Amino acid sequence: WEQLSRRVDAHSNYVQMAATIAHEVRNPMTSVRGFLQLLAKDLKGDVQQMYLHVMQTEIDRMNAILTEYLSMARPVQELEWEPIDLASLIRETFLVLEGEANYRGVLLELNLEETHSIEGNARELKQVLINLVRNAFDAIEGPSGRIEIRLRNGVIEVADNGCGMTLEQIERIFEPFFTTKATGTGLGLPVCRKIVETHRGTLEVMSAVEVGTVFTIRF
Ligand code: ADP
Image (cartoon, rainbow, N blue to C red):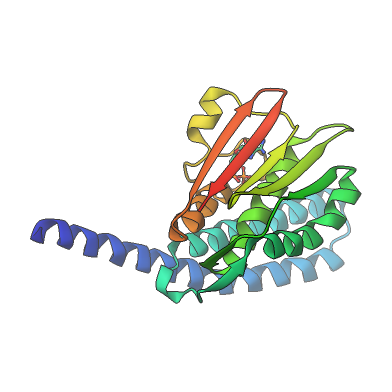
């Protein structure tokens, strides 16, 4: 027991240290990004502009990685817990995503059979739904894309008719940093799973190539 608890302590110290570094590194990065933006105004050449653009998008990606890492490392007890009505939470999330769905020409639908209440943190749970729907947006190519958020018996499903995944992909999607996207961080799904698990729930996936994907959250 002693050995085990020492190991757990050491682990949480490392997580804490990494979170502190992640947090501190963001400030200088923000200032570098600001100066790159100023430089972009003065530089005339197309090639230089292209280099600056790449630098800015790479800084944005570093920022996204750090933000997602920080939400993964945040201790559970820092979260504010409150009663949450899942149907209302889904409707609020829908409002955030509706514009993006229209812009992308994707049909985003709700199918809420009932209302169901749990204890949790609304902001974090919304983040989970937003991540899942944004991944579904990315999976949809061409017209007739459709995403449905369902709620039945306290089970939430986010289903899409996008490109789907192979077995090899399915096995790896919850690994930190696994991504098939050029500008992905590979932290979205690990963060989603961590948030759902801190709510004493599970996050599972079912998917078939060229058919689509369903993510299921059970509380
Ligand atoms: P990221 O979106 O930055 O790549 P994620 O952890 O959110 O990171 O997702 C990891 C990978 O899982 C994605 O790169 C993609 O290959 C796959 N994926 C996630 N959601 C879907 C989906 N709805 N349809 C197909 N593939 C998906």
